[in-house]
Length: 145
Image (tube, rainbow, N blue to C red):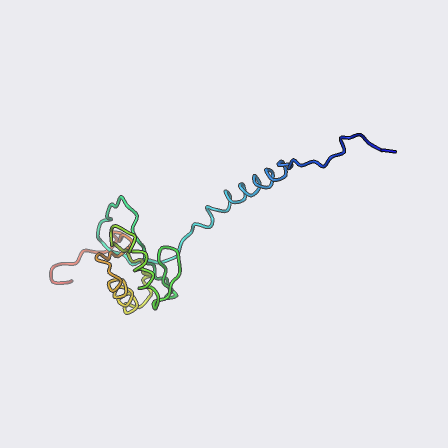
């Protein structure tokens, strides 16, 4: 006595519809949250009267925040291992230019130590990132008054 026909075989096809639904939901979630995650490191830059430089290529950026934490681009490093990481990064690059973004509240000594580690890693050019000064200050005369 058989209760079915010979078509009682296992179905070997995968139903892809639930996978597609989950992937679309994840895609929407990542599209909404990605811009919020690309904030970077908050730094209050010192002001300078120089004009901004125009650059066509992206350079390596060392950031020192107001908590004396050091970042290479957006990756946190310690001062002890910064030279090793820079040597590995610069090894695969054509240009050896590095820009430093240092918070105006940190000590000058830390900036000098970071600069010396950058030079020891083999970097030839170091630039400083600053904010432009607003022209609200009175001009000084030649005698400093």
